[in-house]
Structure formats: structure tokens, C-alpha cells
Length: 258
Image 1 (cartoon, one colour):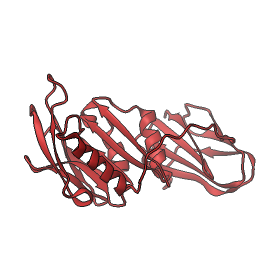
Image 2 (image 1 turned 180 degrees about the horizontal axis):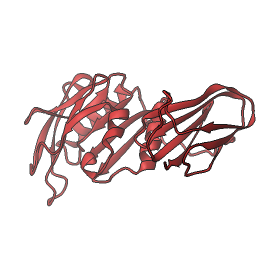
Image 3 (image 1 turned 90 degrees about the vertical axis):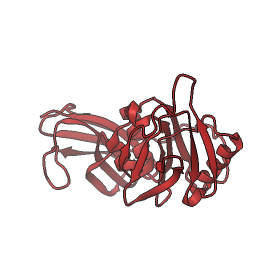
Image 4 (image 1 turned 120 degrees about the vertical axis):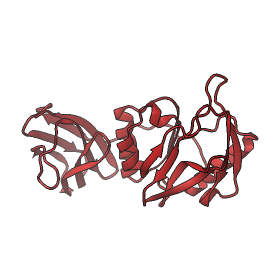
């Protein structure tokens, strides 16, 4: 069973590495529940939310300067309801209204304003809440809502698991980096199996798959000429290479400078 990972933030933007790691985790079959009041305001990349959390559009701070809001669960959490008050005495509650694309749907509604501050993917893989739960009354209601959402993700219990260093490692070396016209990607795999070598932009959008085939143990290399899957030259910027071999995944950034 895959583990649900979550991020709880209060005006704390994600870094480029955060977004890449989250995108890799989701693409690799993981499930992710992103909760963050003012997440969009703080700088979580919209294209990252579009690609990974199926957000079509949003209205920021539909409730500005409010002290509380009443939340009603929809669909998988229908029937649950709670009140959320302001985070701090000096910080009024400012939730966002989220519109999902065709691959997601609303999960809760603010009944005071008929706005939807949370969406869930149709396959229950990802959920994004532009709202937090600091101060619902009673607290047990929020706890029950969290429990119900975890059941939606297929999680019936939560426990800590100690980190174990992988026995085998992938290696990835890029030269030159930055590059102008082409670069050589050298990689080493410790086990034989199907290998995928893919390029993504910084928002997590797939650019091209360079390799998707069986490879023997050892070192391999391939050249990339800065083009997408259609053979079109892509613009300058930061990109990410993701190497997958079996259950092993390794990512590394590179810079294209035309």
C-alpha cells in the first residue's frame, strides 16, 4: 500500500526541489494531500498545481478579513461539518476558491459563501486544500474529517516507519551543464531492468522520455539536444532529469542556456 504524504503550510512557499520531489512521488504512484492556507499567495507554483493537483483556476481570498467560516463536506466526506476561526488574533481567515479540471472534483464547500476551498482528484490520488483547520469547533469534528479523507486515500492506519538507506543507488552525471546545443547524460544502474530516463520542466510538466527499455547492470549514456518529444527546441531554463530503474528513482537538475 502506498503511503500518503502531506504538507501543512501557513504562508510558506514550496521550493523548486519540494515541487519536483512531490511531482516525482505522485508520478511514481504515490498519493499526496496538500494542505496550505495562503499556499497560492505564498508562491506555490500555479503550473505545479495544474499539473499535479488538477487545479483549473482559483479566486484568491474570497473571504478577506473574516473571522470564521462554516465548512460542509461533499462527496466522500458528505455530512461532516465544522467551523474554522482565524489562525491568530492578528491574522484574519483568507481562504481561496478552487475550480478543478475534468480530472478532479470539489470535496468541501464553505456554506456561508458557496465557495469551494478544496478539491480531490477523481482517482483519489491527490487533494489540494487552500484552507487549514486550526480551530474547528469541536476539534473532534476536524479529526473525523481527516480520518474520512485518509479512508478516501485507502489508508486505514498511520504509523511511523524508520528510514532505511537503500542498498543500491542510481548514479547520474550530466556534461556539460549548463549546455547550449546538446549534453551527454551518463547514468549507472545497479540492477538490470526496465529503465526510464525522462525530462521535466520546473513545474513538473513532462518534456520528453529519452529511454524506456530494458538495460543491463552498469554504465550507459545518451545525448539530449534540448528538444521535446515532437523534436521542437525548448526554451532556456531549469529542467529536471528523472532516472527510474525498478523501484529506484533519482532526479537531478540541469540548465539549458541558448
